[in-house]
Image 1 (cartoon, one colour):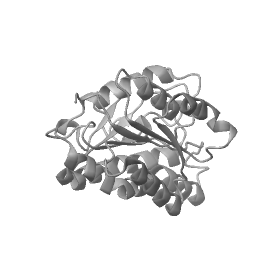
Image 2 (tube, helix red, strand yellow):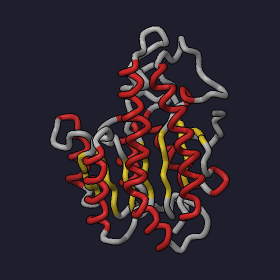
Image 3 (cartoon, rainbow, N blue to C red):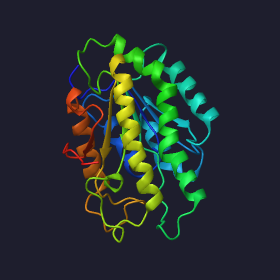
Length: 256
């Protein structure tokens, strides 16, 4: 199995933008995953229409309901994935779901901060925790040595906005609560790498670039196709060297 082969993948926030494109490109690979689990808040809603169309043409795609602020939903998701995999283990968890409402130091409230932390940080933390037995099973069953996304990995989608070492200006990126949540997500990734390393699970955070999505606006530099193509290429090459690190869609380190 080459570094770019992922047998089972779980992508959150998969009904639009980067998440949806990631599902499309995973399914379009020469050797697609045996299982792609794609989550969204309302699988029966209008916003999941594109995802449902994909599922109708790809039996390996399973759409699952997921609410990152609801621990019962997280546990139900892990239980369903466990049942589907039937002991096979989960190779790749991609925590992509997130929100980015506008806020400045003058306008941000306690409620803003807590709400965004629940979605952007606590949700990914609890989902990785719930999926840990599946990730450990995949790592133990794999014949690969060392850390890789083909063996077992947690990938958190972050942002340059969370960088402490090279932050964009507030005028360019006036989303204080989002920026703080992504800085916290970066530290969560580092902690996961420190603890999950002994299980053979790679943990890294990826900045997808400034992308033309609902979050990135049409002024952004990259199309969603370009960003995801880069991300999947980077995932194929991640190893111990990038464990606990933040890199961008080109594989370049992000100072954080």
